[in-house]
Image (cartoon, rainbow, N blue to C red; front, side):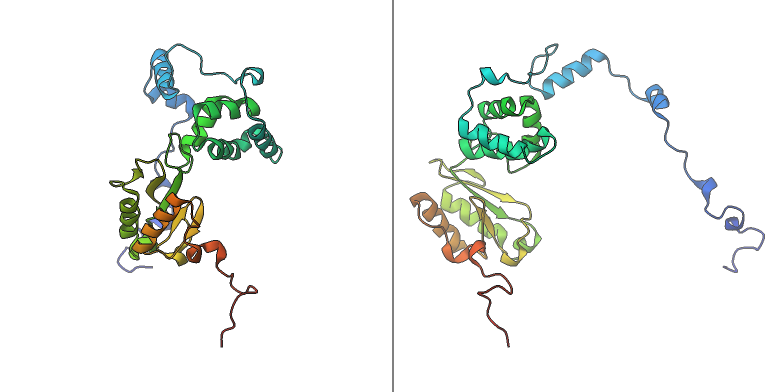
Amino acid sequence: MSPLIPKGKRPWTVDPGHIHDAPEPPPMPDEQEQVGVDIPPEEIEVLQAVEEEREPHREPAPVPEPSEVEVPKELADEIRSAMGRYPQKRSAAMPALWAVQRRYGWCTPDGIRQAAAVMGVTPGYLEGVATFYDLFRLEPEGEHQVLVCTNISCWLRGADRLLEAFSDAAGIDGQGSSEDGKLSVRGFECMGACDLAPMASIDERYFGPLSEDDAAAAAEQLRSGQEVLPDKRLEDRPAAGGPDAKEVG
């Protein structure tokens, strides 16, 4: 005990947890309605309409009728296969969107409607999932995707210069898609491959460590259809302790 506090004025002896100093608990739901801001019902409807990109006072887009939507058989089979892996059909939203993006290059409105018809959900539900994740594309981009990691490990090893080198090689001012539609280049957050820093994902494959010269070579290889940086692919590196690992010592 501190000798600086008189013996008779030590609050923890009568209130050990200082519970009487705790703030008042938040109001219960019925009280919150009384103290909250009232929004007229018509304004709520307008806000919902703006969010759903529709005119006010109209119903949101319904679940498409399968008989009214022409869905490619391969796409439908892939989505149904994904649905079979989950207890709830909505859980297959992400693999369904991946299937759409792989087929069309991006999550097109028609592709989303096709997936919604197969899954029995609204297009708005799938669009909501697609807008939440960076790797789903809701607009057309280049044929080949280059994502340069810009997080701390890669940044410390020159990721900014690597990103600029990829943009220059693609003929892009900053980030975006090239005029010929071949390449899209942008920075991306950590991809969990810090041992490859600085690294990039090229068409969903990891490469690194990369130099500015590698960026120019990769852009040329992508445009010409050649194998991309075969000596920098993560998938070709021997695993620690694997059959190709060299003995140390």
